[in-house]
Every structure is written in structure tokens, then in C-alpha cells.
Image (cartoon, rainbow, N blue to C red; front, side):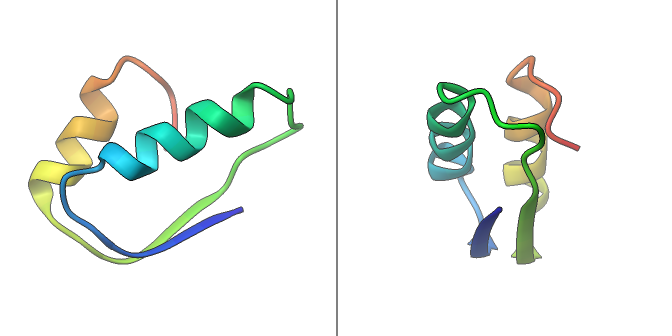
Length: 51
């Protein structure tokens, strides 16, 4: 599970998920308390399924 209190630019979120995927987890959960629309768009447009 990845916990980030604020998702703004999403660079760290994308990097953290990419890093976790290297060990082939069963699932990845990401929790953010606050999120900017731009950050959400970056995660969604990265071409990966995180949500």
C-alpha cells in the first residue's frame, strides 16, 4: 500500500507504483487524502491502471 497525504504532480506516485511493480505484487493500493485534478490526470494519462 502506498500512502501519500497530497497528490499534486503525481511524479512520486507514478514512481512508487512502478517500483512496486518490479516485485510483482498481487495488488497495489494507493491512498491520498487530498488530490489535485492535475495529479489525478497525470496518473490516469500515464497509461497504467492504478484506479
